[in-house]
Image (cartoon, rainbow, N blue to C red):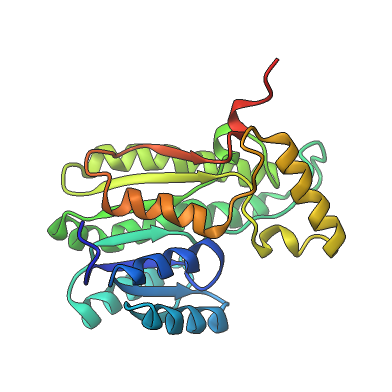
Length: 256
């Protein structure tokens, strides 16, 4: 995919990894639909930065839990620019709960996480599928090492990301050859996803402990994840149905 003038939708695109993806795309001259649910300020700022970087961008509010909102986002892209070349399913939520505390999660917690992390991605792919087929486009789902190694913020989150990974493979098979679908599975990324949980000093300690644990001794930035996402979206012509781990080697474990 030539990113110059390509039209790419990013769900949850106002902050963190989504915003980083938007800005990398903008540097290549892409046209970006930045979807947000609650982070309007972040989305508007990201759109502003995209225009400064040489791309174009619009924002649209919508909750991917709702199928009508997913359709609205796709329609907005077509009305604005007449095509859809790429989709980055970045919208995601979690609930922090110790895995051994079986009372910490309810059925509704599972439903809420699945509704955004799995069903929302499915609905966005469905809403964009016809246009992606026309453009022979690409989808990247932002998953997590949680879905590979069964570690993470909660059992519900782990299960939702494992389901997203399985869905990535199933839809990559079903929608080939016109559409490529892959997933990126980050480890720890330095965003407010975790920083809001801790005091400043606690968060610094949290990051240092991760760096000591992983073989590459580094915590990912949103830009690190964006680089892998954009590669899959635009350059990996023969890669589909893959889950790419961007985790500084966390999945390798410690050497004996």
